[in-house]
Length: 88
Image 1 (cartoon, helix red, strand yellow):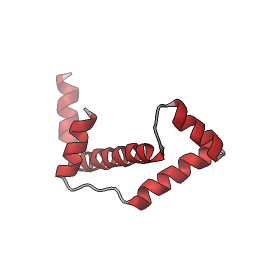
Image 2 (image 1 turned 135 degrees about the vertical axis):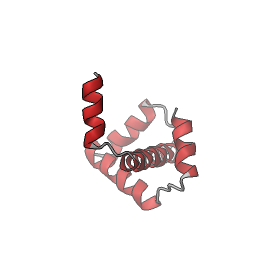
Image 3 (image 1 turned 90 degrees about the vertical axis):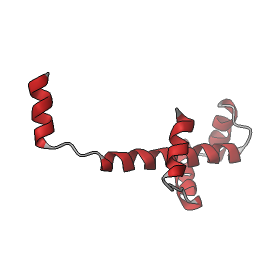
Image 4 (image 1 turned 180 degrees about the horizontal axis):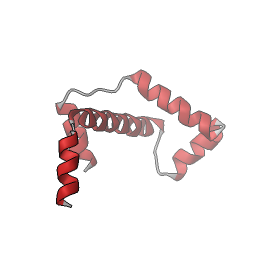
């Protein structure tokens, strides 16, 4: 499913900047407390290097943007809510 979502994000022209990836990475590093703990986490979770982890972050951010875009496209009006409530 992740590949399908990434393909849809690409089809919709969703991009993730290097700055967005760096900001996410900085936040994760800060949460870890030290580079040593961060690097240990990478190793324990099977990442060969930081580049692979950066790609995972980029993919996850693209999917998050896609989900947000789809949420904005969905409109549920009062009539829809009432109809659903009545039917169920």
